[in-house]
Amino acid sequence: MTTSDAPKSDIPAARRRVWVLWVVAGIAYAIDLGSKLAVVARLEGRDPVPVIGTWMELRVHRNPGAAFGLGEATTIVFTLIAAAVAVAIVRMSRRLTSTPWAIALGLLLGGALGNLTDRLFRSPGSMRGAVVDFIAVRDFSVMNLADWAITCGGALVVVLSFRGDELGPVSGSSDVEGDSGPTRQGGVGVS
Image 1 (cartoon, rainbow, N blue to C red):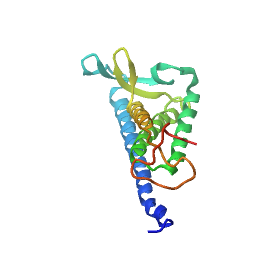
Image 2: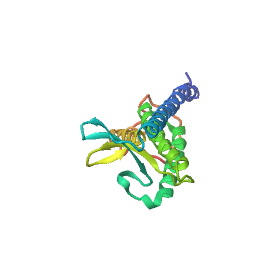
Image 3: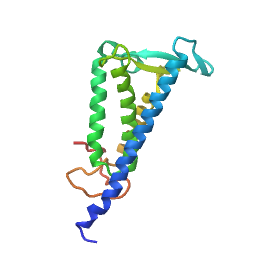
Image 4: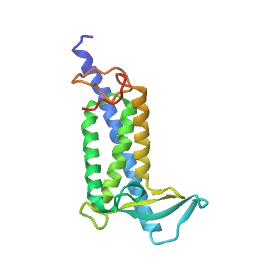
């Protein structure tokens, strides 16, 4: 195999990794959207449903701000941030050479799109919609499955960065070095 053939043979593997990202994002988004539709239809306006005693319960809460109810007056800012995150992940997907990074970015993208959908389409609408949260953990927070996808994706990003796994080539190089991508000290190397 010549040197010019190597990048062509890695194209299907790179495409599979991008597909992994899209499939994970789609699944995370669909589960989040479906859970919110079900919770709003069946639980909104009703008493909380205990899941683990009083420690965890299902209770609908409309959150115009960020986690822990922060920034309720700046909903439009969180809408723009979620949109920017989604665009950044789509742009980074072009450099994707690692299946674990595809999973991490897919979780982040699916979660960001789930909450972005609420901000765009739930009342009062126009980029100021309130996110539907429904998993209430006593003395902690009320969350949704998009938040959990973002948290898991973010934790995976931290683990991959500490391990030195890269998202993809640091420079404009198209070399692919296996499933976990080339490694270097220092993490992501996003440009």
